[in-house]
Amino acid sequence: MNDGSLWLSVSAAVLLSGGLGLETLFTHRRWTPWFRLGMPLGLEPLPVANAKKVDEVHESGGICWDMPEPDLVRFWVKRGSRAAPLLLHGSFELRPSGSLMRLRVIWAPPLTYFLAAAWLAILGGLRGEGALTGVIAAVLLAGVLFVYQRSAVVATRAVRYGLDASR
Image (cartoon, helix red, strand yellow):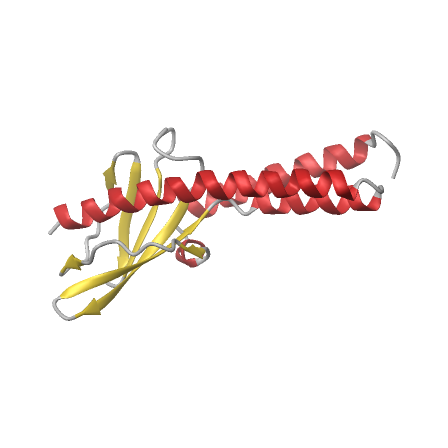
């Protein structure tokens, strides 16, 4: 691996662009397994009373959501919206609790950012610059997780409000 390897730079750019393209396709085609993949939000929104299945796509503040199954709500950022970062997506699992439905929130930033950070740390380590590139990768991931998690909270509020309003 030479300094300034053009092949390495071009191949990394193509792979990362392809990864974001694939994630965009999964999100905008609303592939349900993609929406179930993610991390728990860590906050539990207030339960909703009897959320009934709706067939159309709803929008609330730039956040779109639908219910493909009676116990699942998918959410994503509307294309072109500035309400949340690009490709934020997730789902709510609706769980009966007495007369209410409890909401378990799963959210996810684009996974390509994690691959980019791993690529940076690994190649930096192979070149003997792991101390620097590892720190850069960690800061990149911390920033992505911070921004996307805060936006997931905002999206959760929008969808929770939308679920209440759709009854």
